[in-house]
Image 1: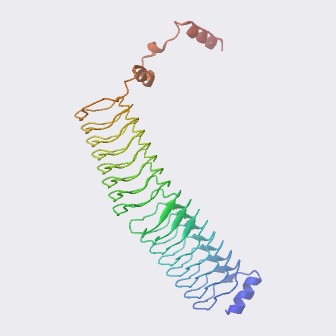
Image 2 (image 1 turned 180 degrees about the vertical axis):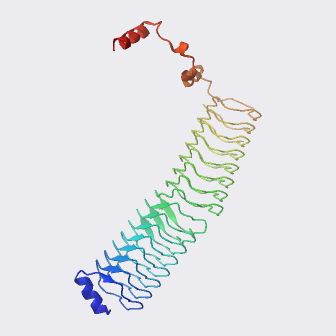
Image 3 (image 1 turned 135 degrees about the vertical axis):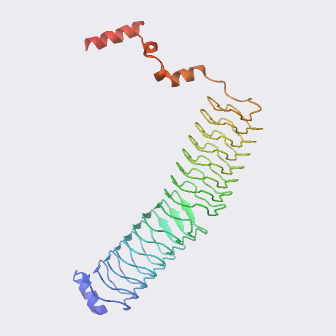
Length: 371
């Protein structure tokens, strides 16, 4: 099929089916809303082409050149773009579904509101790409290149970022649920305001990293280094900080309910107003930490060290402290005798809950008998 025949077919609203355009020069062509089915476009030159709202189904674009092309609202379904180049392309609202984009080059492309799902993005390069409200889900992301990329209110779910190039990447109010960063160095990295529930930071070097206001529910930080890191106002419920180093970290106003922090180091950490109810911190080191206005109700502090900590209206209600080193309890809130009663009312014998001997109780029973 010649270039002229291709244009005529698309202008007539007919699909382009099972033809070979391998190596064809289609650069600068106008093919909006074209429908391509099982078309061989390997090595084709589509630079600066107008492919708005085009649909590619089961097409082969291996090594194709799409630099500067307009791919806005285009759909690539079950297609191959392995080693293709789309540098500087306009990919606003483009969709890649069940496609192979491995080792493709999208450097400086615009991918706002784009959707990439169930696709292979391994070793693909997205250097300096602006991801605004972009959605990436169920994709293979091994070795993906994200250097200099900017993520704004975007989502990348379940991504393996252990080998990703994140140099200079910025994430703002984005969702990276279940992301895997395990064992990689990320000193000074910022993920502030992001949703990172279930993310894996096991063994990471997050020295001076910024994780403030993040949602990190169920995240894994076992053995990680977070010295000087900022986790202020972060939601860390049920996160795992076992044996992690949080020396000098800022955990002020963090929510740390039911966190696992056995053998963790919180030396000189700032934990003012932190909610640490039910924290499992056996053997942890809190020496010199600022615990003013924090709540450690029902915490396990067995064998923990709390030397030279700064208490001030701190709650240590019903803690486990066998073998713990707590030289001074100055600044601890007095125990509320009514709290235990309020928390265990449902455990009391039925007789203790019999109000029939009171006037209000008798009126209640009378009304119940009338019904």
